[in-house]
Length: 138
Ligand code: ZN
View 1: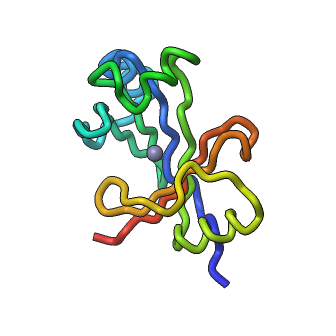
View 2: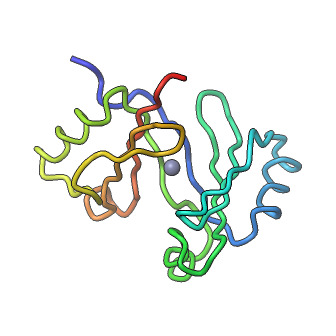
C-alpha cells in the first residue's frame, strides 16, 4: 500500500504586504524567492521560497474578495495552511472521507502546475487548514 503522506510540501502564510514579508524571509533568514506568481482567478499574488524539499508560500490578496481576505480580516496575517504531499491525493481523499473527516470540497481539484489538491476542513484537524497536494512530474 502506498503511504498517504510523504512529506511537508509547503507552509502557506497570509500577508497583507508581500514585499515586507519577502524582505524578512530573504534578508533576515537568507532564503531565496524562487518565483512570484499572479493568480487573478483567486485574487492572489504568491511568492515561493524553497527550504530543502519544502517551501514557504507567501500569499498576498490582490483584491478585496480574494481567497484569503476573510481569513486576514478575521485572524490577521499568519499561517493560512500547511500542505502535505500525497503521492495519490484521490486515494488519500477517499480514505479520509471514509474515516468521517470533513473536507472543504466534494472531490480533488486541480491546483497550480496541474497538481491535484484537496483541503481538510479545520474542524476535523484541530483548527489547521490542511492541504493535500499531489505534484505532477513535469
Ligand atoms: Zn497551498
